[in-house]
Image 1 (cartoon, one colour):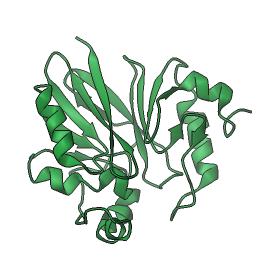
Image 2 (cartoon, rainbow, N blue to C red):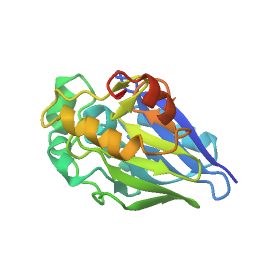
Image 3 (cartoon, rainbow, N blue to C red):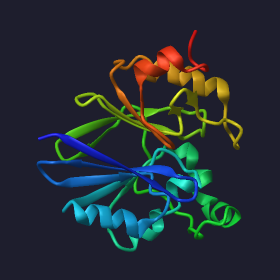
Image 4 (cartoon, one colour):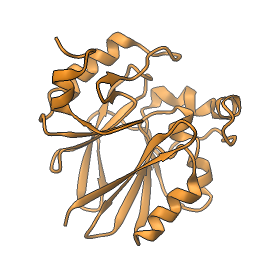
Length: 212
């Protein structure tokens, strides 16, 4: 049975929270729970799924600001991001208030993630890649079998993530994209942190930040 996914744009920043599930086991995960938690839980319920984890690509408020609220309803582990984003998760009370989001307490994930780890949803495995640059602790999730990459705010349709935030680094971002992501099969579908999907092949040809 196939791996399935549904992209849900949440928060005023229209951040892509992705619901990923295994059709056979009905086990599911949510990536980057930035907010709009009742809506996300309704999507899980409507599909008859069992939510087993939250996966976080990085610690910015629009990607992590809804985690504590969701955990009040679901006792599930929070996996990721890399520990280098701890300062962002600790700053959530300030940043959510500053941007007019529902105020989120700070939190520590169940487990920080490292390059090369593997996460599972049902019978499907995702490889963890550490892609610092947008934030120092940004990770992405790659499923080779289905050619699917959950990229967070690393790679977008014909552009790349911002690096003007605290501890951002443009050179690191471009180097990591080129050495770790553009080496994936060109048919790989990319779920970006905001906006439309793209593919590795399209970005290799048309992304002005990456075309050599």
